[in-house]
Length: 356
Image (tube, rainbow, N blue to C red; front, side, top):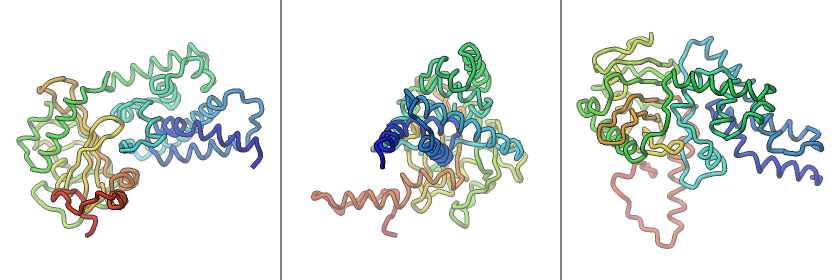
């Protein structure tokens, strides 16, 4: 490799984590983000960069424009299917990667990412660049080929639309939120319907990427390894007997939906997703669902759950399984067993029987 080629590769690698995080915020999919960044690398590799004074700025511009093009295509597909959509969960690693650290720096909750679907591609790009990556309006203007004044208006309009759609103004208190999520996990595992009702607000919202029509009193005949792709996206009433009104066949109430989902998992674990705790549902050592919990923002014991975002699609859980699935646990145990102080004693409630 020539000296110029080495310098190009070095510049790209220095910016890569930030580019992946930016593309993920734009597209809501780690796989699509990786594809965009790969396209950007090819453009960078083939471009005459001799006059590029700031490689990071050039790469950010190309990444944003490529993500906008892909987002326009994706939104047309979603609109034609008339279906709901959820971002791919990005679970936090115990030993964060460069991408993980870049994502945490670009702080934006999962719930806000879902609401970004209300924005046009240019609005989404401007909002993400300004709010998550601290770009000023002059930088955004250069990327979007608009004036700074126009970009300021775009960001303001995006904030207004998000607030109208119910975007939380700030993250909840971590301790209060964590306790509420743990109580939800315990209630789901115990199938405590009365306990579940006490945790929710009067009009909770349930957004799921697949309908769950099984009765909560019936065990499934097979593991929930191939979830339906029919989406559910509906505001539902607090009454456990009132059905979802999403147009799906054999719709069930929100209480039946979440309890039936929990029944299809062997256990539930509290994990961290983008700096906030959520619930991962596991069946036979694989993640079959991730539940993001939104609260009303109260900072005491009166806090209530206002919404759940439930992802069950196998494709969108691939990254979660690479981190938490059976193979990941086996690798972790192998590293532990190599330690000189390793003991064969293991807690009886260890979530995955890796030797099965």
